[in-house]
Length: 367
Ligand code: PMV
Image 1 (tube, rainbow, N blue to C red):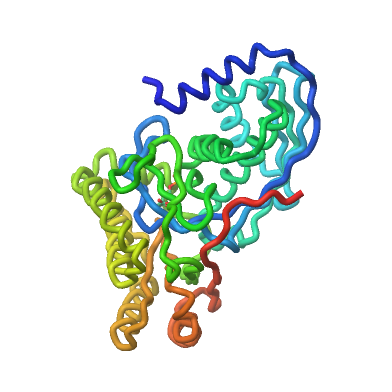
Image 2: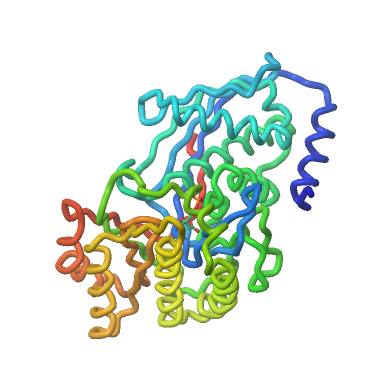
């Protein structure tokens, strides 16, 4: 069964498809950030429908910059894209992008006649363990939406962002959230009116103490992920604790909203850490089970909890599906967390690497 927004886009595409066709050439360029989930998306149904709602902080420094030269309307065997990633032709990425473009052609019918020359680069090292699918797919979706607006003679407005989030989601679920500044929620939840499984929505009301929140990423282990997120999501199909987990995520979404609105950092940290440990518990209790933490991940977690208890500083951790640790704290705690990062946590990191990031403004045009 078609979902509501999907149906609307397909109807619009049908109408646009019957209009007089003209050729279009040009270039668009967007920078888009990665994000870090506080309530985790882990488990999905076809096609890219989350089994629970999630919420993330949009980052600032970890971005993908994507430029797309387009030539549309002169062929009918599209979409066809050439891709240069950080100066190199990477066949595997090009294949993935072409399959993605093909899959979204029903929503953007002009793609049938499209040739692209794409260049893309990340502001963070490829081996850092920061998920690049959220930043890269959201940057690509913004590029496509700008081309779409140019073709249809429409403005880039809030409706465009909904469409961009929808298209980004079809590339990578978490990418749907990177479209918005500050914080974004994706997936239907009673906590936010207007929330949807089809696209993310911006989290409107964020207490001043959460604005400009910091995320210092401890690089415990760089390199390739042991478990791809698609494999991870699929493990939830048979995890015996899955349904309890999905209920817990919804309950966490509902508890989180007043914390964000009122500036309750203590509640936020408890909930965030519980979500991170649950994600890893799900990996451990899947079949086969995976242990994605390294000894230094556990060591860092212990240090963070001890430091918080001893000093009363609001600082907590979250984890992605990997060994690296995201240390989250308000900007007001920077003076005390800074030396703690350098003295206690940097020695646990690969070559002492910590990437300093924080809450950002979402995608920006960069031509
Ligand atoms: O967007 P995906 O399919 O790469 O999944 C992301 C999964 C987590 O990063 C572990 C959690 C999340 O909500 O971002």
